[in-house]
Structures are given as C-alpha cells and as structure tokens.
Image (tube, rainbow, N blue to C red; front, side):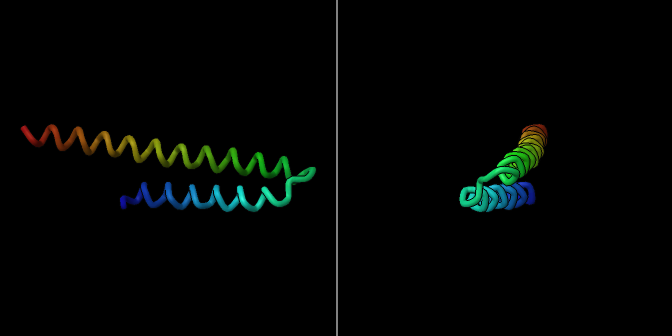
Length: 68
C-alpha cells in the first residue's frame, strides 16, 4: 500500500473511532464538538485522497510518456 493509501486508511480509522465515541454520548456541547471533529476529519481525509489521486494520475501519465 502506498504512503497516501496508508494515510487515508489511518484517517478513516480515526473517523470511525470518533463516530463510535460520539454515538454513545451526544449531549449538549459534546454534540457541537462531535460535529466539528467529524467535519475536520472529513476535510483531512479528502485532502489525503485528493493528493493520492493526483499522484496516481501523475504516475499514470509518466508511465504512458515513458512507454513510447
């Protein structure tokens, strides 16, 4: 697995941990904290996946350019 793939897996695991944590205690201020944490984790995961996709496309382009 690539570094980006491993980072994405770790971030997804972190998001699941937060989901399970907050599913058992959503009250008052904890609800706001839960929402903020989930949004931030989702943004971080999106950034990691975007970076991985960019590198994947670059690798494909490099491969195709070197093939000819």
